[in-house]
Length: 257
Image 1 (cartoon, rainbow, N blue to C red):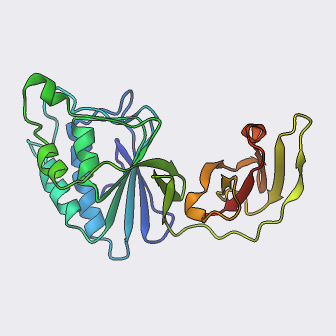
Image 2: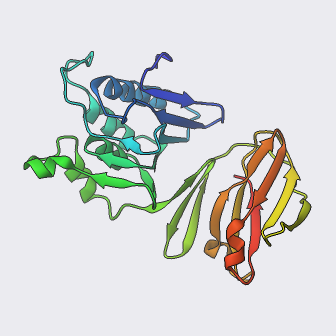
Image 3: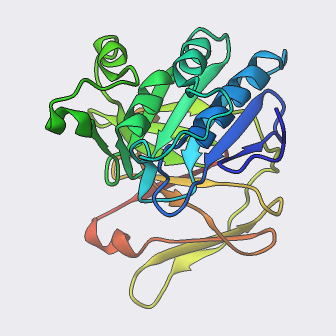
C-alpha cells in the first residue's frame, strides 16, 4: 500500500498488530478516496504474513464514520470497490476490530459490520442506516451483514486493550505491546478532601489502566474500569479518584495492557 494515504494512517510499531486511524474531517464522511484506501489497505493486510490483528478507530471522538459522501465519483476504479474489500477482509485470517466512539451511520455502520468484532462506547456510540428513512435499501451490505450479527457489543475502548462491558462483566482482548517494569506505589495517601491519590514511576510513554471494586473478594471480571493513569511528566504516573468519597470503601488495581 502506498504510504501517502489521505484518509487513513497506519501504526505498525507493534509486531503482528496494525492500528488504523480513520481521519477525514470535518465529520469523517466516507468518500471514494477512503474506499480506495481501504481496498489498498486490505491488499496490504493480506500480503503481510506476520500480521494477526488490525484495529480501526476514528481520529474524531464524535464520528467513527459518517454516511457516504454525496458527490461525483473520484475512485480510480470508476465505481468504488468497497464490497470487494469488505468481503476480502471478512474472509481474511487477520482479526479485524472496529473500536467505535461517536456516530457510525450509513457506510460507517456498514464498515463496522464488515469487521470481525465491534466494540462500542456505551456513552458515545450511535449506529444508524439513514437509507431506511428514504425508503431505500442500504447499498453497502448492511442488511446482509446485520443478519449474521447477533447484537452490537457495547463497551469501553482503551489504548492497548479493549474492554467490553456487558452484564456487569468485563472481557479483555489484549494486543501485544509494551514492556513495563513492576509497579511500586509512592506517596499513597489522601488529599485534604479525603480523595485518594497515588503515584509511581515506570517506562516513559507506557500505558496503565486503573480498575476498582468495593468488594475485594470479587473476581476481576466484576471490577470496573476507571481510567488510564495520567503521566504528568515522562515516566512519572499519578492517579486521583475524586469519586471515591461516594463509596464507604474502594479497592484499586493498576494493570498494563
